Amino acid sequence: MLADRLLAGDIRAAARLMRMADDREDAVREELKALYPHTGKAHIVGVTGNPGAGKSTLVDMLIRKLRDRGQTVGVVAIDPSSPFTGGAILGDRIRMQRHSEDPGVFIRSLATRGHLGGLTRSTNDVVTILDAMGFDTILIETVGVGQDEVDVVKTAHTAVVVLVPGLGDEIQIMKAGILEIADIFVVNKADRGGAERVLAELQTLQDLMTQASNRTPVPVLKTVAPTNTGIEELAQAILSHRETTRASGGFATREQARLREMVASIVREASTARFAREFALADRDHRLTAALLDRSLSPWQVAEELLSQGK
Amino acid sequence: MLADRLLAGDIRAAARLMRMADDREDAVREELKALYPHTGKAHIVGVTGNPGAGKSTLVDMLIRKLRDRGQTVGVVAIDPSSPFTGGAILGDRIRMQRHSEDPGVFIRSLATRGHLGGLTRSTNDVVTILDAMGFDTILIETVGVGQDEVDVVKTAHTAVVVLVPGLGDEIQIMKAGILEIADIFVVNKADRGGAERVLAELQTLQDLMTQASNRTPVPVLKTVAPTNTGIEELAQAILSHRETTRASGGFATREQARLREMVASIVREASTARFAREFALADRDHRLTAALLDRSLSPWQVAEELLSQGK
Image (cartoon, rainbow over all chains, first blue to last red; front, top):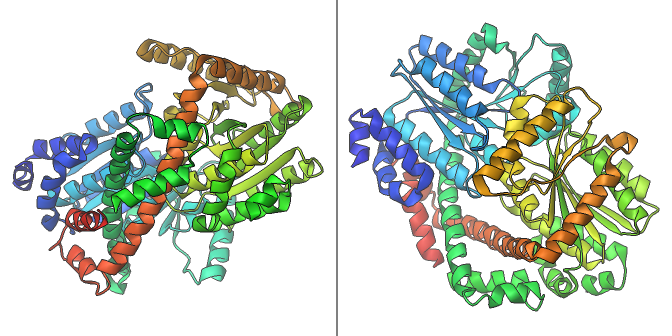
């Protein structure tokens, strides 16, 4: 079993499991079940922000800081690139090369082009594998906009939201859904004009959230990733959040939510696959599609029929 | 029934149905079933692009052009704002006021903060309502990044992808997943520096896609929305795409996919709700959560148990 080899320290077995998890969920399920009892030790950190926020460089510098503290680090980079463009993949290769001599670092990229819900599930699978491999910290780097991405970061043990000056108002607004789940705010590229404005906006936002929901304001850090400015403080803030939440019980709440979301993502993907099979079967003479098209049967009637079969 | 009032031309009944669809899917289901036979006449156009691409102004100008041609226009604006920020909502209010004297235009905003799959479903519901109201063209304006948004635009009859110069490479890469589904590319803010570079990148991309998949290159238009530049050409390109696909059978393929996705989104939301109920029931003594936490039971085992109950 690949799981046994992985637990014995075989990196190639781990890499192979990750590739399998990307392609065929059912093929790795028994392996993941075998790995699960060996998980629960890693601290899972979500790092999210718009494209252009400099997340990759930030994560790269953060890896070094955590390594300096003697931690091992696994990374899941959710890569929004298509096969038609090589930019992000290339960036990732450079990072991997930089850390490729270091057995204390493992970086895995995931494409975002899977099925609905599939991204959450495959991210969870890679996190399970990295956790079983024994990495102390697992960083999940993701663009913070889709619902999948929000779900992934929301259930991390520590959620880091990266903002950047000068991308304009609408970009800040867009991130609103994710702003509420931040445990740590980072204003990256803080040497740029407009950094003070972003800091002021964050202050206003935190005031509003505190009033609206008794939420405690979270740390706001300034970083300039390429010059390593503020990264030490970020590493420290993550470790502090880890300690604080483990002491307060906040960690257990987050971990419960994460595990429950794992179950939900497995159920969701299985339900979607089952629906596709059932629809294909019910529509094998194309009469369902024809009835939908000529409006003699509504989508709700078809859905109800399929759901009652699934009962 | 609200559906009857809507079909008799009562705008307030339509607005009320849309609000209900946003909040409680089950409450409007019978209404939507009653409306469905009266749908299928509208041409559905998805307009997608990053925040800052100027989509709202573009859509606003496009509404005017379509009105000049005698068309009525319904708009679904998928609004990524949070209750904590008012920007996007305000922008929308201004637009609504501008067209509020015109019964040939109806604009509806949807929040993006719903459940996974819920956005697709509620967008579909509003499209169904606008279609039954008799609007000739329905514009769906959305930020093109999450899987939900891609699904919505992918199944529109015409997909317009809006790019903009000067947002940097990574932003362009991010949109890659959605670039492949464009029927029309718009380079908005084409008076800005860098427009030629975006056009060249699109040319390269189209060359690659043509080689890879025998895909026919799609129109690339330059617009400057505030000065109304290129909007006439955009309106024309949309109408041409409509005519071409209706003549070629491409339209039927797209409409089949759209209706099938409607069924899928209803099934998905129902399955998610069913899972939540079943998990709560199975975990009422919190033993499932405890077993997940202490790693004695894996998420896959819990999921399999729930799925076998759902059979």
